[in-house]
Image (cartoon, rainbow, N blue to C red):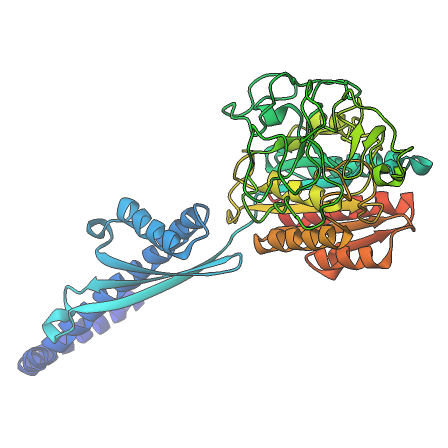
Length: 517
């Protein structure tokens, strides 16, 4: 027999055996199948339902990621994010499409948004076993990145900054600060810088009249300074009649544009064409504190104009009648005295007003750099008023309009405050009218500075402070150290090189932490 024949006969034998076995056991198999059928069907149904539930969970996880990303970019509020997630699901993953219902839970922890979704899948096969639903869940965590930075540079432009051209070092440090922030930002729109040059007052310039520096309308054109009749804006700081753009703080009872004198208070100006009688300051009164608004109360204005005493016809010197000229030592010009009063005569109403005006938040690098060059040293030091206007620049409220809301997570706010000297009440005139004649003193200036620092920190603003040169007192250094958000954000820079380095260090820190794009 051939090999093929042997294999064929063997195969036929196997087939014959299988036919006989099937005939002998078909009854047994039928009985077993009848017993096992419900169990087999249940197992298959359970497999299908749980496979479908797993698919639901996968869809839920994918949808949750997309919803969390969309919602976290929309708001920082838990309730708003939760509603946004639900709305996202309703619009893009309706129950009819996914086959399940959805219930989101949102927890916001700093820059992290945790979203958990619980869904219910309605079974098809397991319901015959009494299992009608399967609960599934998924969760995701989204890390939100701050997209932009708003920073106010509060910069000392006082007369002492002329020493050894310290103002030049400040300009270099400020320019480097601006360039570093813009160079490290993926989008220049994510950087907004405002500048507050200060001395013993603040120059708001044409912004106070609702205008840009070039005379075009600023915002909606609403002014926050009212010019008295006969007074107009001037770009000539030496003008004997015009207003150069500085402002004074409020009185307790608010601003009265018609008033030229407040009884029992100091530092009021008199109008052109009027005499000193009843329109000056009373050198005998020392009980009033009429200008107590920096930031915390009614800080949005309006403001009265800053104008040092106008020229008057009474120019008798404080001599010859036994009245000391020292009573008028802060007048800065000719004086008039009698047994009760001492008045000033001066023909430069803008004395002490800084050369450079405020610049609201701006994302134009070239405009910012050009504005740095307008800074010139003059006047005395009132750092508290500089910090007050730094607050106003960062505020979303009037008088400026560029800032985002305080609680906008995606925009970080910071202020960099720099000075080269102690607060002083010396000098002729200030944002609190006649310095030293208004019941204000260094202690009150420092207290207001501390209050403003705290107000900024309460709003979540990162506060950096810098003391410059070796002539600053330890007390001022302590105030600046306490003002900063943390001790690491206070810098003492005795030299010009260190000042420039500090500005660069702060700029890099802000770039690394806050400008993500």
